[in-house]
Image 1 (cartoon, rainbow, N blue to C red):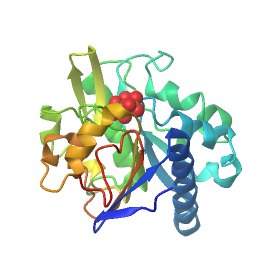
Image 2 (cartoon, rainbow, N blue to C red):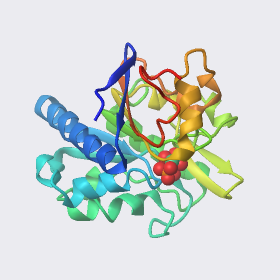
Image 3 (cartoon, rainbow, N blue to C red):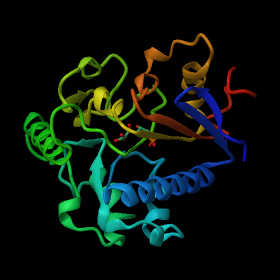
Length: 256
Ligand code: 6PG
């Protein structure tokens, strides 16, 4: 396992052998951050992503060696984004977390802040925004203790896709987005919310991510073309956990 490499003052990248190693490292970080937040503030707020990459992490936390290392009653679960489908639908991000994690831990209903996306998208985004305001208080953007993000092969993250108007949102916490391929209405956290997090943890694995990751981290590269490259927390820090497949274009001290 290679040591983390600092790439900017508040961002580091760690290249690990495979997705299993990425998932275990992510679970360790989750345990450490949640423990520290709960010791100091008796609560921990985390926003989780969908997609395939974080599923192993959710399994490790829900039924693996890390299950008993987190005071689950003080954890508040949010989602980074959601498809506009019923929560039981096979593509629901709520369902993706409920199976391996939420159904396996002692967490109360009031700590599960689901994006109610099964109805009209704008109304669902408004309702989620109200829940965020109620939990985090006003004024200002929600400041999550931890946000777990993935990255698509096109550099999207959450449901913020290259060229999306949602990337220009500067006031709202959550917005509806319409994705043409595959056709989905979704609801997503906005970039300002991601960039107000205390800790961002990117999990990236697989050869299909290598080119974009290389461009994001290449010195002189145009990272702003990619939504994942726009995630740079104002006060917080970012850790990228990347497997060797996805890191193929990152050499030595990370740069191409
Ligand atoms: C989602 C995620 C999305 C995901 C990327 C990567 O709801 O699907 O928010 O941004 O993280 O698409 O997905 P994979 O982990 O499947 O590569």
